Length: 202
Image 1 (cartoon, rainbow, N blue to C red):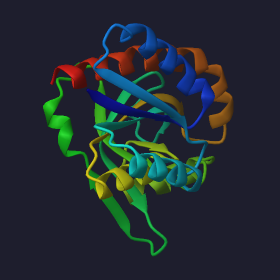
Image 2 (cartoon, rainbow, N blue to C red):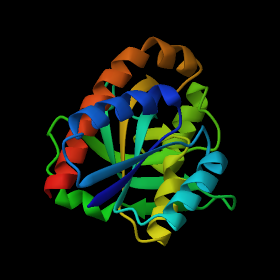
Image 3 (tube, one colour):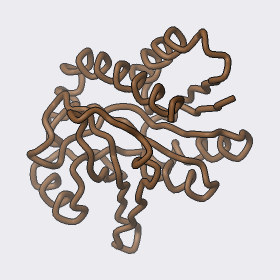
């Protein structure tokens, strides 16, 4: 039996994924999913994820949702699969977690890979975006994945994340997110189902 913990910050991201996976893999009794809405931010996420990972023997933990683009190479609607998770800690040092298990997966060539930076606050100005990219050298930004990756590394649980680029991180981020929500959800559910299939068949 394969036990997989699925994480998303928002119900709008989690519920469609839950519906898709429950339908697509309902005939496979060897795969068991647990779905958790973490809420936005590292603090909210850390407590919920750590309790789940501590109390359950998960084979995989997967974060899903949207991310903002920091790089001109990532466009709205791109599927982004992080190979590295980054955070600038309270001392101003850049922490890096590398995703080693990625080499086992045969991902579609149109998926984008790279570094995902986790910010403790929304990136709302072009200057913040440029500065974040300069300091982190990451292609995309979210607000939860790094702490989840750190917890999973601590407990030796393979961690993956799959993101749909929803906006170019700037002052109209929220407006763009809402406008692109349908596109994000459709791409997210399809990509996530493919990722789960890859994991099961590896």
